[in-house]
Length: 112
Image 1 (spheres, rainbow, N blue to C red):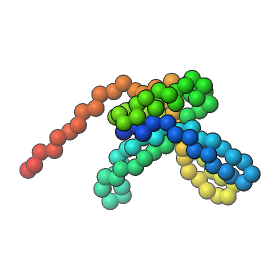
Image 2: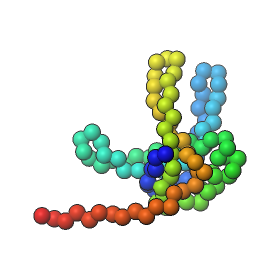
Image 3: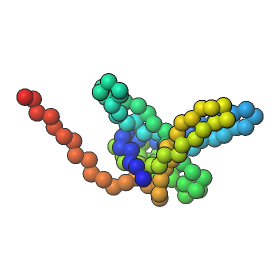
Image 4: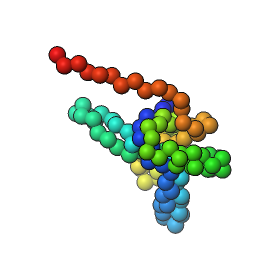
């Protein structure tokens, strides 16, 4: 299990069509800071998908209540490949699907 730490933007539903099939993705949006290939921090919004089981348990409401708060969300990576030759990964809510109880400590950089 991995943990994403960032600002919660709550629950979101996204509908997409592939060929003749329509899919609905239920997801939690988390704003995270990542360092790019040049060493510069960038802010990105990452979607973490909820499984059918997590939706049935009402975890979408749990994450919606945390909108605007700093959270740690448990995730696992699901890799995929398409028949068209594309590949990628999705982040999925992991375990019980509830926020992790961790304490964040910011490091203060001292000027030399």
